[in-house]
Image 1 (cartoon, protein in one colour):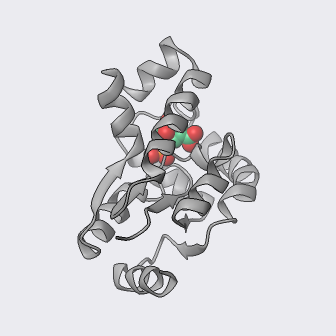
Image 2 (cartoon, helix red, strand yellow):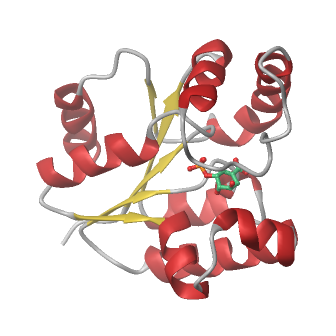
Image 3 (tube, protein in one colour):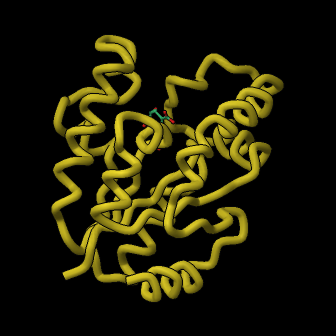
Length: 170
Ligand code: S3P
């Protein structure tokens, strides 16, 4: 039985795609918190932000996170804000292994701009505003992200390397 693995990092850093690959390698179940929230509420993340507000979204995110902490053999993709609210980061670190997928703000901006995923926090930003906003927001959030047990660059990530890091930290 292995402790849960939590992938954390800014929007667009690849938590879900890396998480799916890592889960296959570790023969674990992959869980995306945003998807779990959407299934539970029957609403999209964008709809929850719009109709119920961000505070309600953060409560839902927290309650799903709490329920995942006691599970084993799972790889979890968290939302970009999850580690930065309540004591979520502490909770994840205590109950599992946290991995920060670190990416340069410019890489994040171009990935977000190219993606189809609706992201309420950045949807109104222009192409020019996006990298500036992300650089500032990431500085604030890295206070939390940098507490992760494993920090790995997202741009050139090799799943073999990540798998070894995880196996060595177990
Ligand atoms: C958020 C990130 C999103 C989603 C929500 C809020 C954030 O997830 O949870 O839109 O606060 O950074 P991704 O990181 O998967 O885009």
